[in-house]
Image (tube, rainbow, N blue to C red; front, side, top):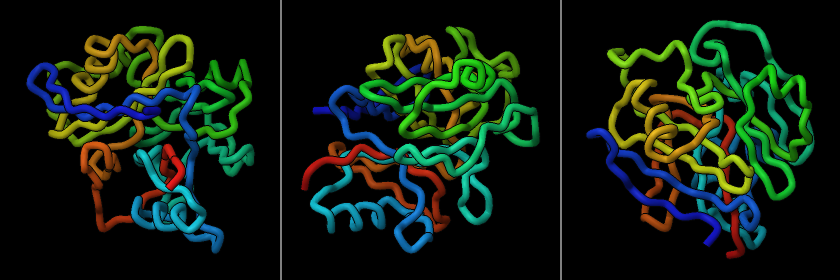
Length: 228
């Protein structure tokens, strides 16, 4: 299987992790339907895929968005750039530098800190910028506090050193940034990890009979598709 999802407990917090073999999985970003409106829900995207002979094997919200569901930062879908890279600090979690980009290329996927992304300019078939970075070169984001009281359901992604594996994680209970990032680094041994969002975080994982639904429509969705 190109996607494997399991539940785990680490330091009294529950997480669901979905590990994707990027070399075999059909992994893509999805935002707008052909009519220009956002898919918004996993079920809407799945119905559209089924009409083409495909279906969802995995999906997760994949980055922050404005009120009209357009991405906050750099966004590339099927090689087409919709939004440019934002390198300056700003309000909210996105602007809590360093932030980063999740970049999908040929048989690889990498989480790359934004300034490094700008300097190296990698080729990405799909890319989504979000923030903050959770883990940068094996170190937790410097602004994360172990004794923070800010807790949310959170989701994000980390990538292996060789870029062949992407690990998507959602917490099943509210967690701090520090606890969430520590799970990536210390439990999963991941050196580069990126925060996607909090509170609205959702997961679609039919292999474990999970299909999260929320009344608010989503922006960018990362998904693994397979033949129906």
